[in-house]
Amino acid sequence: MNELIPHLTVFLLVLVRVSAFFVTVPFFSYKTIPPQVKITLALVLAWMMYYTIDVEPLVFNDEYILLVMKEALVGLLLGLMGYIIMSAIQIAGSFIDFQMGFAIANIIDPQTGAQSPLIGQFFNMLALLFLLAIDGHHMILNGIYYSYQFLPMDQFPSFASESLPKFIMTTFTAVFAIAFQMAAPVVATLFLVDLALGITAKTVPQLNIFVVGFPIKIGVSFLVMFTMMAVMIQVIQKLITIMIYGIRDLMAILGGG
Image 1 (cartoon, rainbow, N blue to C red):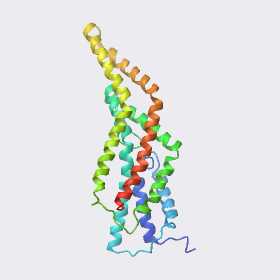
Image 2 (cartoon, rainbow, N blue to C red; image 1 turned 135 degrees about the vertical axis):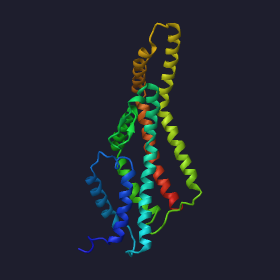
Image 3 (cartoon, rainbow, N blue to C red; image 1 turned 30 degrees about the vertical axis):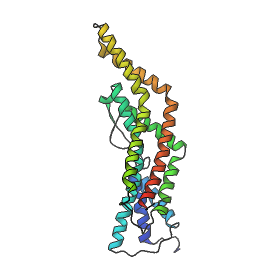
Image 4 (cartoon, rainbow, N blue to C red; image 1 turned 120 degrees about the vertical axis):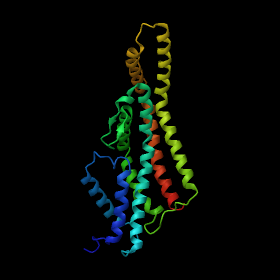
């Protein structure tokens, strides 16, 4: 019976890291998942991970409070790294919506609770389904499980590492590069459509180009997205891979690697 009841101080530290990770990481942090499910999953996962961690029982003192704060910070940072990388989908959707004219019709994303572009919401759902199809949610759980190999429970993260600023800049560069890759086919095509509409407006002044151009740009945009859907899936797959490796590299850097 004693083996089934973990030491409360160690179990609490594991629970804090897992819970903080679920607050920010993609998929598990979405508001469409009931809070009861998140809490239950965090408790069960922390209870299972407790028996894989070889740590002596800790004493509740001032240092233990710092360890709790450290575990919460580590979990938030790891989840936030995944969220920042996956936000490239929203950025690409914003680029496309701005060119299509959908920027005036942003909607509330039920998953995050924030305003989201229409095309970005579509790409986000597509990425979520693709993430589930390739068992990406299992890889995310593997990330928080193996985080104790890079960041042990009794070790504080190394924020003074010279590699951390370089890693952050490289990650943001990759996010905007992938967002531009996703939006480039549609944005470039709409630029040519705008150019053609401008020439048409000069040659046929009687034509109300604002009324005619809006449905033309929407139709062309959907046609291009339908044609480039296979490429979009490949870019989303690349984005998910970068997210997994980005979380791992962040753990290694914070652990002093």
